Length: 328
Image (tube, rainbow, N blue to C red; front, side, top):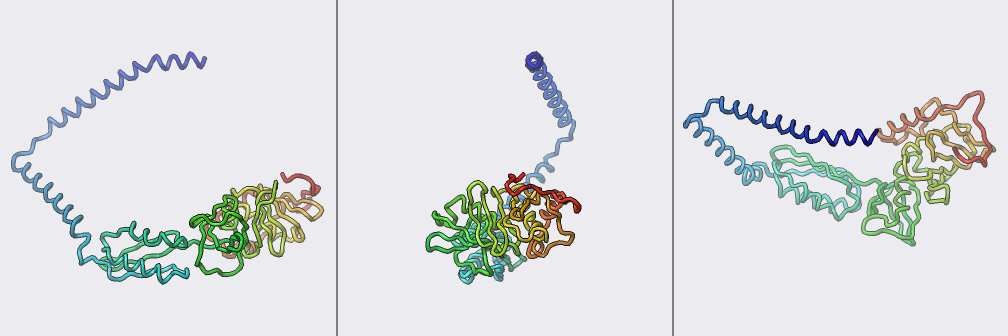
């Protein structure tokens, strides 16, 4: 039956093409008739239209050649904010000197981006101008989320694996071990890059409690807390949802004393080491400080979505299975 339908459609193609050509001819005829019906401009009107066109072209050329680069719009005041790296003075000086070669009508963003290419800590530039003479540049820096150990080298890295040499550190960060080190400005080991992605997805309060993130056989990536259970992630996908699930389980008094929290399926986290596994732990009624502290708005939205996806356990009959039972 499908073959017959396909053959019928092919047979109708010539007819459809003919109809399309006829429609195009009809539209062309109607358009030509409308154009013929329009009054033709006289010699004076044609001269005026020509003068207007020439004037517009001259103004556009004048703007491109002189107006946008004219001294009356030169950048004389440059403010740079957002820098905390050890190279902040050099970065600021380079940005200010480059910006002062421009005008507020002609910002050459490529030149400013080129200035900071040698500083991997800079993730992006946000540029605003205030006509006639002011420009503000906000430097968006990478945020260190982990410390990479490679031999004797110890460097902070961002969530995308960018090495952040020279960026000051505040507080403790998870450790990621690798043998391949840094290639250019990024981690050379894909496994270490995925571990950094997991560290970057953690709420700030939880990240400070993570001692190390590594790859552990069949369990995949595991985050080892300094004073708590291991958090089993499996792969590096759905990182924020997994951290949300882990934070909620860790805040639940029923999970105290657990040896691990398995969030490979964030909608059904599992707790092990208590003599049983709570596959759907009851969520705390009040927001946990461990989850909320330092969490950006984007992560707060993920937390809300995760809360809806994790069904609460019954208060009367907890779901219990032997420890050896595979995680659902």
